[in-house]
Length: 136
Image 1 (cartoon, one colour):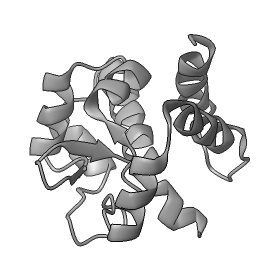
Image 2: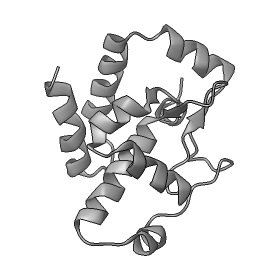
Image 3: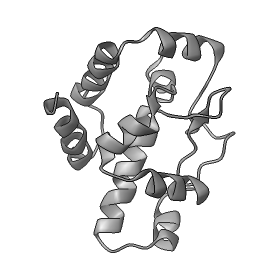
């Protein structure tokens, strides 16, 4: 499975994303409403977030903490549509794989993504996500 596909795979429910980002569900839904993130939806309409969604939320959080408002964030970060390459994917294959993953496997996948060296990756985001790994 390619890295882009894996990073866009819908894996995390909103509860885990809240722990990873220290954002409230209301904040996350607000950023979704403003099309800064586009989580996938299950058949039961549950939001599922990808690694890219979590990274994007951490970037938004960092900008908010620096005093940038939503209009400024929209200018800095391109809005995401459901058809864009950055949209979170839910396919039959990814849904089956997600259901098969235990929490430990999901945790291991997150750790693997954090340890990968990717050009242009902000260390702040890795620091934020690694904090989640050490809580367990």
